[in-house]
Length: 368
Image (cartoon, rainbow, N blue to C red; front, top):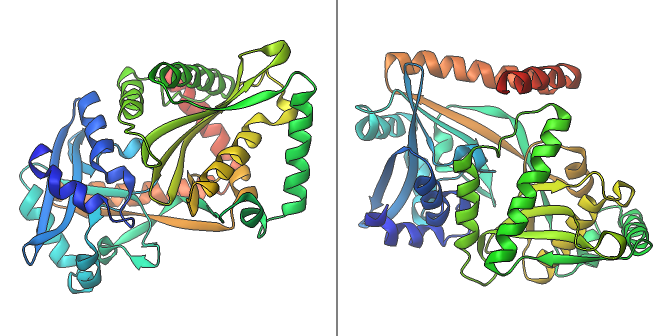
């Protein structure tokens, strides 16, 4: 990665490009995971045109190239220069396929790129020239104004303000709370450890596998915390509601946010079900971090991929995501067909909540 860091950081400054393909995010994943990496760099008229940071995984007999850290990315774009995006209509699907074959054919059977918005910030992703299938999940975004009043205006503002006041009152009745934004290294890591504990309890109670359980996954998020160089742009920062009074110091809810320019992404969240669930501390924390994002100049609060009711209560905008599969070998073609079928099956299952819940329980039992 170091050999292209200068060009990489230059491309990642473009607000159109996802922070998940940023240098720090990818570097943290590589340093905490045993992965093989291929970085495709292209130039246009002597200037950086795009960088595609990929990791190679083996699934049975199939070697698959994916975006680095795909398991924990809320949306992927690749890194493209504005000049290339303006000319990307000149690059049709066969040209992209030939590029991947030239760069990867000796090491990869299938290029599988997921969680890609075809249209983002009014521009079409250059990769959309390739055949894609809609992902079973969408992402949900809230447009931010300069303050909370403006942000709430398109929503049911009266009901939201009433709920907010009720949450505040209920917590004040038991001693109050404070909104914590972890700033020191000790605060950050203590809060992250608390998140891991809360999430493990939550997954176990729901009968679901704990996706944060692996030591390398936890090391990845710890490294992201340490990459915070100050300012608004951060790979990962933690916010929490810490109680006062009879539960002095207890953490009722936590959320992890990433920010690049005017775009804030909620990466994860957790709550302690034992601490005043009637006050909805998770919802209250969303209010507080949305307000903080608005007054510090962000224009998009992104709840990330995945359809949950609380996201729909906040968001008017739903962004469809797509998956792209480019087979490079015969076995890759079979895997691409199977992958596309799996994506469509997941979409069908997710449309049927009872079946989805049953399969999640089976998955949790198989993971223990």
